[in-house]
Image (cartoon, rainbow, N blue to C red; front, side, top):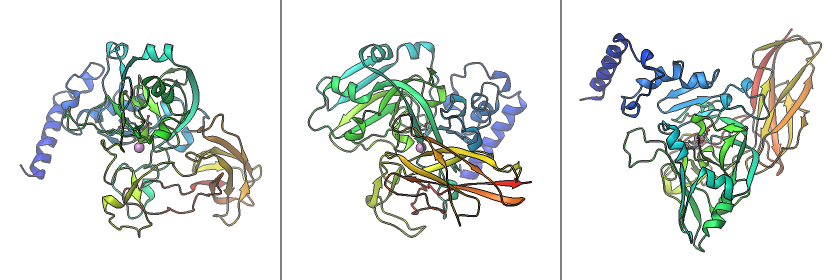
Length: 414
Ligand SMILES: Nc1nc2c(c(=O)[nH]1)N[C@H]1C(S)=C(S)[C@@H](COP(=O)(O)O)O[C@H]1N2
Ligand SMILES: [Mo]
């Protein structure tokens, strides 16, 4: 069959299913063969149906339904602690459908270059290791890809592939201490219970890892809870790794195995062009050979304007309060400034200290407009090494990662 014929056949199947009463009636029932359905069929219905992803996350923007990817509009990210319902979703494969038994019997295996491999239940984690609660930001390395030119394939994230929730769990380093790292341990390899889009059980949609130094960082945790309750299903319930400040892909969801390796991990989306950028600056659009690509580590400094909402009508005389967050990968944010004259002049904002390292930082400023009319508000953050967000897209790379250009919103001063 040619691709055209295949597409035609799929469209036909879809039409017939819709005519037959569709899946709407079936929603709410378990659909055991969900993972085997043809591309594009069920997930749309699920995303839009009552039990669907959008009803779990009202107001989020659906970027793709198979795999499921949703981002959060900036004005819905105003909370210092992101609620589950407003946490973006980035899936590389199909989220697992878990029964309560699956969750009760969940096991985390620690193996590879360790003295004593471990198999731990979630109760073991809660009981045998010190519990920590931290606010940790998670940002997809592709956040901002939409604005990169020439464009890159992949989810066209704008600004909303970022969250900062309060995670509770145990330090990965405490678990690794229990297992006993061998001298040749250099990298971790993470595995989750989601399935590959092809349905092939031998393939993983994503399996990334960390250099052992980042794995041993005291803020790298295995979380069983979020915001005082369960982790949302789409964000990794019942167990996930949180390695804040690095590409979100390092924070494996539905975590069930960490292998310690004596070399850099080569799992799904560790190699080739995935989550990698050129080792040297390249002109936009230049193909870069795989061997010249480097694994992304700390994410760059960035900020977000969460209020007002872009397009808001405000009063010129009284001025307004502008607010948002800023974060800087492994670093801290030193200052955030705002401009209402297209970057000609900048004014300082009040910036709060992070509640802990790797938490995003809140900032706000009171702005007065010199006259009525159209204004843009731009924000730029600077990290503690003096690095500031660029006004336009920074160093081009083939997959459109690490775009930390300034966030801009528009307001009408009346
Ligand atoms: N098991 C698993 N973990 C995963 C992914 C995935 O596809 N499967 N996606 C990763 C990517 S690319 C990102 S950006 C974050 C997003 O976390 P969130 O969906 O909870 O917002 O999860 C990461 N962890
Ligand atoms: Mo990501």
